[in-house]
Every structure is written in structure tokens, then in C-alpha cells.
Image (cartoon, rainbow, N blue to C red; front, side, top):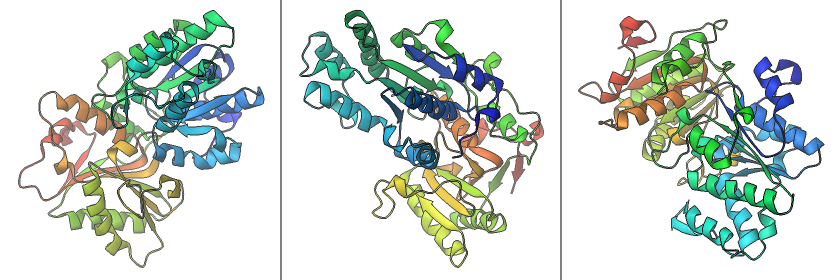
Length: 394
């Protein structure tokens, strides 16, 4: 990830950079490609210049790795944390015990809030986190915002040592069906007034053609559709059918060989699909100068997200759909659409997945499926070829 200079900021970004206060709670919302992560990092730089305590918190390890180079260049690598790491250590330092759990990796924030309200903490003063910057804030559960919001009120009422928080979010980019917060959840639980709620609209990532397709997967109200980048034109996204997964893998490998100046993202539905496609890609790529990488927590060689190198030419990064949020690539492939199942109420959630995955692509986007006698059900969520937003190729 490259951090832009001040002169490269849009008018919207510049306004937030200059006007958004550093006290209390601030919320910044915007669709994919509008520069939320850029603002998060620039806000962190400003806090460092002000000599303020702060933490920049991102939901998963892959996004931390993606921003690693920009953070190192800015001297901020010590301030970035994953959400699970930050929240666990924050609570442990103050309470002297781990956060209560509902189940593995799911915290009981109701019990934690009760402990705060009852004064049942060893070092309650350590709950003051300084300034907390949350990127992809829609992925943090509502109970967390209840706990943080109470702390904001408590500190303000008690001793003037007021913690602050900046949340950057887009609730149309949720990849968890149950654990998420809407913009309304965040705003209400943190007590954010309208004058501290900022919105980004300008898309700096996608071509017009990709952005137009992405809008088909938008689940919000029509008046809030993301703005199309009229000045950037490119290829119309494609949908391809193959007889086998081997053919899908060869298609991706051939594109990579012919476009070895690009960084490429490939997104699949599960860890098992990821492992299988990785093996399929190794053969066609053998002997080339292309690099193939992935993050898979169960794989002995690829369970360390910090090994991932982003933004380099001739790289192919294979991820599950849950790990792709916040990233961007020159080209994106979404193979094995036949592995996705949609029934009834799951359709809206599947559209969100497509929205997130498709919006990672800067200039080239291809969907595909194979090993399918009938057309996968997910195809009904894609625009028809007659609409001119996607080319259907056999």
C-alpha cells in the first residue's frame, strides 16, 4: 500500500483531515476505494506529531500485513494491532484477567461492561486507551461499542482524562453474517453527533466498468449508491465457464504470465477450496518468475500473514473471501462460484460478499465456475449480458 501525499488528497479527504476533531468520537463512512484506510493512517501520523498515545486497530492479520510497508515508512508499525490482540491486552491490563468469553474468539462484552459498571477491575485507570483508530469498524460487534461508549462517558464525567476514538466503516462491506455493527449501531453506541459524522464518496480505486458492476451488488438504498469514477475507463468484467478446476487454474496462470507487471488477487469461498486451487496453480506457474502466496491459518507454511508481500509486480495472492476486505489488486479473479450456496435470506449476504470481492479490483475483474452440470445459483445475482455490465464467456 502506498500512502498519498497531502497534495493527492481529494477535497473530501482534505476536509476530514483538517476538520475532524481529535477528541471524543468521530465516524467516517464510505464505500470501497474511497480512501478510508489512507485517512486512518494519516490521522495516526497527526496523533504522533501531537505526541498523543494512540493505537491503529485493524480487524485481521492480512489487512495489517497489507498496510505494513506504508506503516513502516511512516514509522507507525509499533502502533498497529489486530482487533483481537488489542482488545484482549487492553482489557487484561485493566482487569487483571482475560475478557469473558461466550465461545472461542467471541467475547462477552455484556459481562465486561457489567464489571466496569460495578468497579470490578484491578486497574480501571488503564482502560484509558488514548486515541483509538478503528479501520473496517463495521466488523466489530455492537457490544464492543457499548463498552467503549460507556468508557467515553465515564472518563468525561470523572477526571477529564478523556479517551477518543475514530471509526472508519462501511456496513455494506460485512463478511460476517452475525458479528457486525451498522453505521447506526456505531453512531448511537458511541454518542456521535451529526457534526462528527463524515462521508466519503469519490472512488479512487476501480475503473468505471468495475465500479458499475459493483453497484449491482450494493444492498443499501438507491440514493446511497457509490459514485462512479467517470474518468477511469477499462475492460468490462467477465464471467467464464470451465469444464474443470484445472482449466480455471490455467486461465488464471496464463493471465498472470501475460501480465507479469501486475499484482493479482484470487478469492475463494473456503480454506479447503484455497488449498486445492493453490496446488492447481503451482504446476502452470512452475518455471515462471511469478510468485504465488496465500494466507491460511491451518497451513504450516502459510499461516503467518506477515510473510505476505503486497503491491509487487508478478505476484498472485490467494485468499478466502473473509480475508480480502480492505485490500486492492490490479486484477482480481473470483473462481469456483459453484461453491457458493444461496437460499432465501442468504441472498443479501451473498451480494455483500460479491460487493466486497469485486471492489478489490483496480482494472481487471473475472468471475468463473467449473464442474457444474447446471448454472450455479449465485449467477442470478449477476447482471445479464444484455445489461452490458459483464461479458458472459463460455
